[in-house]
Amino acid sequence: MLTAFARAFRTPDLRKKILFTLAILALFRLGSLLPTPGISYPAVRECIAATKDNSLLGLVNMFSGGALLQLSVFALGIMPYITASIIVQLLTVVIPRFEELKKEGQQGTTKLTQYTRYLTIGLAILQSTTLVSVARATPSPLFPGCSADLVPNNSIITVLIMVATMTAGTGLVMWLGELVTDKGIGNGMSLLIFTQIAASFPSALWAIKAAKGWNVFLVVLLVGVVIVAAVVFVEQSQRRVPVQYAKRMIGRRQYGGTSTYIPIKVNQAGVIPVIFASSLLYLPALIAQFQSNKTAGWVVWIERYLVRGDHPLYMLIYFVLIVFFTYFYVAITFDPTEIADNMKKYGGFIPGIRAGRPTAEYLDYILTRITLPGALYLGLISMIPLVAFALVGASQSNFPFGGTSILIIVGVGLETVKQIESQLQQRHYEGFLR
Image (spheres, rainbow, N blue to C red):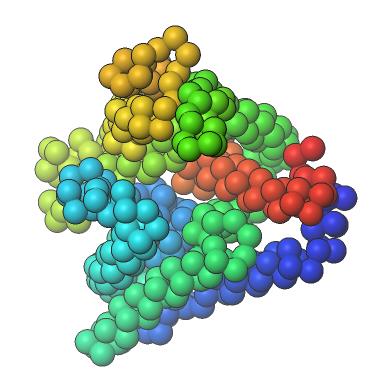
């Protein structure tokens, strides 16, 4: 692997792409540390030191690499783009116009990407306005128990500047991600998320060491290695459905007669079900936090069962939601009927299965069975931070080896390594995974 890495740097164009990607990631991290104009940075540091991590904002704070709670220029991170992408992807099932654009190929995809950008900016304005409003409150819900004044100047001009800065930061993050995709290595948006999550690993591990000592720290590292190996194994696992194409004579030339397969991954849904489940559990806790009457029965019930992740009811609801959203997301993104029609159109068939409706039913049967272990796998991986919170005392939003963080780290790492490997193979070099 080290030899292949050295050869990648000896290749001029590949070296240029890698260095360009690293430069963009460094610029991205710099923007995550720059405070937004109007924010009292000493007050933010004081509140971060005085309060524990807010579990309600844990997912968003993780995706921003800690920039959210620091109220930096890139405080919103990549989350508005992720939300916009998911919304546009779901709307392709509901809105016929979006479905037509999806089928138009590159031109339709470009149009959908443009809609995603517009929606990202709209969500960024909404989220930045909410974040600034929350930061202006005293005490701020971002830091329960801290009475420091985060925004000393509450004038409307200051608020507008803060909202514009955070919105522009989101637009810049989106542009940087597209630059990496076009001129660098790997998927730009995925690498930005990878960078933000990886940036929180050292502080999270050191917090565990400081709280529990070297013995627990070494055990956590060992468990982390085992979890990463298991995640890599499952992420690479797939069911290959064989497909054969009949021979066809067009003029004097013969086409077809080849054999291929349809790869159906065990984790077909990726990390999206975990994000859906976390967001859905986040909403009632957020509503309860802004409720003035803290003694109301429903507020007390939510704060007792749905705020802290160490309660069995919270874990059960979280696990069930992940399983449900896994089946839901796979059902709307993988259409067996469409695949069966395309196979029939080009003369393809699964050995032993008739083309058309029987093929669609067979693919649906396979997908239903293989989604079950994938859903259970996602649920168990996502439960690791909650168990760690109960046993080790580490914050479930910052525990590095589990949940959304480890799924994204491993997934993006594998994707990027494969892309570099494919470019090395084009130049007759050995790849990383050989």
